[in-house]
Length: 602
Image (tube, rainbow, N blue to C red; front, side, top):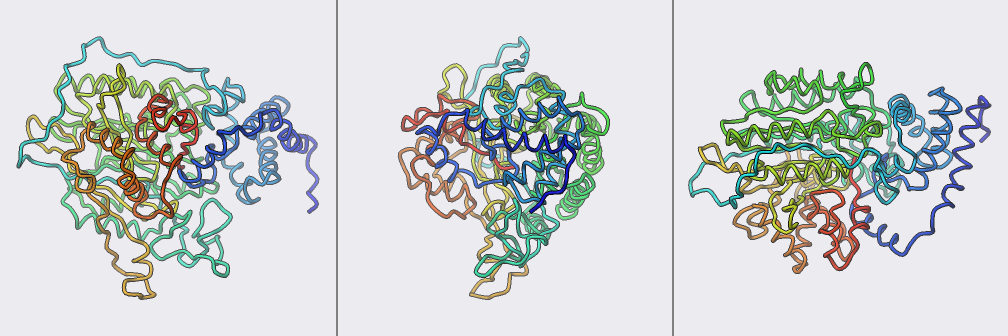
């Protein structure tokens, strides 16, 4: 196809991107013997996700950033630079033309401005965005949080509450990913990063179509499935409270607008309030998909139209029914807050986007954005002084954060292990956990970050939600998690009906997939129990394969063997990024390789 005549500067930029890429690719060594094993891990570990920096090769990333630097030095016109990048995206077949044009237009202003204000070299930017396998990101690292000089209290090992002690029943929702464009009967397999949509077209011969309640593919959910969950959850109550850790919009990250994001935030917030009722308090946290462009969360030093005020202010309005004014104040400032749930129990909701390597604003400055971790230390010290227990909620698990942020958080958890009674996250869409160990020996387990399964099906999953049973509201309560359950909507059954019917169920039942203590033969869910469970996974493959099945909400296509298993075990042990010594004990497999292979979902 003959391309239209372009301005000389535009053509120069595009040609530079196209012709420099092979040169940059040739500058990097050939694939090492380790790299095929890396690909093997990726095959099992995470399905491919459109527009994740982890899906871009290191040479391509460095080529793009180098040419962007050259382009911005030679031509300050953002529009021409963005059009050149879009043209390169098309010609390098990174996505189809429509998606390439839309994604570059959407990211143009924020990303280029962040890049202009950044002091990073291309190798440093790619190390941050792609991972440590692509270079070293240390311009602003390491940095350290200041801890009070108050001595750490003596550690008392946890114990089960007395029989008959009150328990709290807590609903946990995460990663809803409602797709307003979902259409039953559309193509479930398409060339876009997200399918089952009105513009996905009709399925070709012998290809799958989108199901009524959801689909095992790279698809999100229709609103009726979200409402079905909330109706089911309401009847499964009463709930003492709800934790909700974000990611409301769908994965159509190339075509989102602020208006759409706010509309979806409003719709889902009000639906939750409607179905669960005015007497159930919901404590939300912000996901990486709430903003547009996706992952774009500038720290508070960014003002004006590029700030996150448009998002935080709307959240404050919609969540005012659940949160007091003091919590709303810090929510408007930086997307985080703290408040007392009950006497003796406090929740801290963190904005984990300030630790995320995909947040390109951290190229400008990644040192404790918004002073959130220093604020967390202040909250924890005050709670320790008062004898409060604290639950921490957030979206992205700390083990997937930027290295310095993750190490500082790990250090904080070590110092306040007697105060932090629970850590609750989402983001990976899977049912899993990450361990925290005593920093001095790295052998005594002291904390667990629970990672709950997603509501969405993305990718190839059943819809699901989590229920926690916690030590309840009484004097001296540990507030620890005593047990948890995972519920799913079995799409195989509800899309086609039971007994061979061809029509979908109209009032589908969400069913119990498993209860943790019963399934794993545990009496408690303390850190020592999870550490022992990992050790059992190593020697008892049957138990591990059952975990693999439950991790994927009852829908897996093949077992997880060898390198795949090693990668999973490494992740479970590693509540801190680059905690390589915790990975190297497994079959002599290099922790560096495993950590580099651990992709995250958008």
